[in-house]
Length: 136
Length: 296
Image 1 (cartoon, chains in turn orange, red):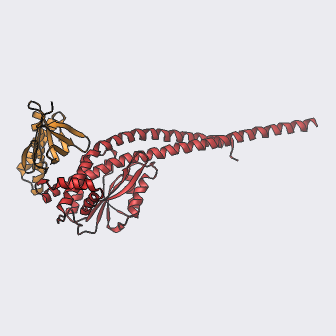
Image 2 (cartoon, one colour):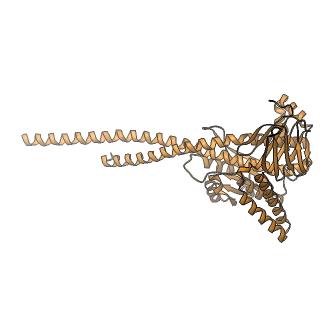
Image 3 (cartoon, helix red, strand yellow):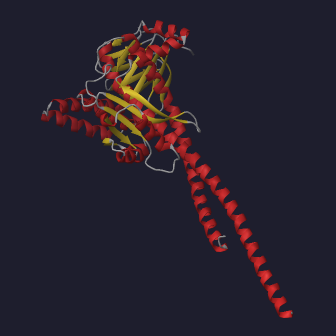
């Protein structure tokens, strides 16, 4: 059963252990761009940007979740994600996410001052990540 | 000696108080169990967070980041976590004493209050209450901690405050709660090193594994992004521990109140019986005296 490509993956949130198990690949989005992590990756600590998290448990089994914020610590044979906000697809309220997307887009269209613009961009990224995850 | 009726009235009143304290004890026991479970579940996150942060800071060494050096302002923000309700023994006053007894000067302190009891007492003592998040303590969410952190960090980077402290009651176990005053920002870069030095073998291991660590974005920038998360997680952890401590303290206070009431009822019972016996004896003497007077 044990796949030699597998490494241990742990996702922890402040409230619970979100996921714990073996995976052969993890894909996530960091502030520097999207990365896919396989076993024997170089040690890396990176900050997470809102996006889709894909956990490949085996060649057929893939789990997805909306990973909104936190950071990730990658070691050779283990990956730990400290997630502030993360949701499984069935925990996402798709209507609310859609609303949030529309609101953020409107605010972007209005071209408010700089800080608001940044906030709206973040809100948009968050809602898009949620929608993507929920539709999977 | 008090009359029988007075004693009886006193006894009933104590009995009803005892009922209340008993009920409160049961309620806080249940709440304590829940809060304890929550605190245990979130431990993993904080331990991991703490290790990562101390690791990063001890590795990056002397970098001139605003989060790591004392700000230019003399003002110190103190987050004071107490409860919204009383009847918890020394729980609230211990925290207040911790703040007033510390070396922080009253004029320099800005209180960010979480919990009405602490807020009211500190206000009366003449402290400057900057903000009040008392609603949060009823049901602490991670989101609340994030909001408080945002506000504090904004004030910190605007140089309105130079240091951020946190006063809360740490939850060690059901009977021991430790009032704690903790400096959140600037992060003391020597802390991580000192602690690693204490356990030799382990320190070497971690140091070896850390030399290989890469950061993306680079360390200073990553630090800037991760430190707010670190502060938020500390505040959240403090909130959760404080809730557990509050219920633990209340449980203890109510337990001793109940047993005190028991004791008082016992004494009153004795007094009541004595008074009754005295009354009977007196009546008897009167009757005998009367009969003797008649027969003679």
